[in-house]
Length: 389
Image (cartoon, rainbow, N blue to C red):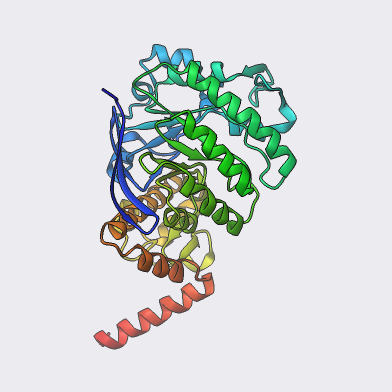
């Protein structure tokens, strides 16, 4: 009996509502995975993630291989036990991190040799080595080693696709852990014929799930959406579809519209630590002077701990004073925003109203900062007139 299964519960156009069942519980989809690169979502604890409603957490193979080492994690009972998270987990292959360090690596058809960003020591990843690392870490979902090519270079993508496919075959053979699902990764840049070729090749390997890689790495949003338009219909309908490294709210809505099931990205947590807070009307820079005496929460109507408890003025003070609590409270809010967005997307698909949800979301979320302030002034003026106060 398989440890994994995908249940498709409803569709609304190309948007899909489903569940991916894993040994550590189901992942309701569409889903967003907070990124815990080094077995930790920065500033948060596993209990915070549970309270926020996270159903999946991602950790990074490259970083954990270098520190503390996959052998140590395995001796400590695997990644779940090591970090104290009992829900589903995914590890990427480390390929993106290796290939983003172009000045530190040498690529060949067998694998890639690279120098550590920590101490300059030399290491080598092959498909077999990456499978050894990911199986030792023990996440529910593991990714094949692939080559993330520059998306606009046709000639390079043609060569990279051959390597990616050969490496996928080798990963499939080397991966033997039955309680871990190995996903294939479709590559091919922004070129529809290469994407279709990749999807067709990987489908023949019959992975339990498929990712779309190599996007949000230099192409325009329009090019990303066009690539998804071509790629998603070529993927199996009975298996989950994962868009790697994409996490801007507007991109998630558009990708779900095109048939993607789940996402990961450092964006919500990274920008939180820089004082950028997500709202349905766009981002707020909490460091701005205009928030210095603002008694409102980050977003009116938000039910996260940060918004229930603290004002914008207090958060601005924490950031200006460089208090660690500010980073934590901002992270709580941004992940709450992302996870509630996924809740709302699932509800809209369930009720067949996702097209309206998409239109309404973009109408609000693309407002400029000036338009947001104008709308807030109008709202307050109308409220004062209505209540006579």
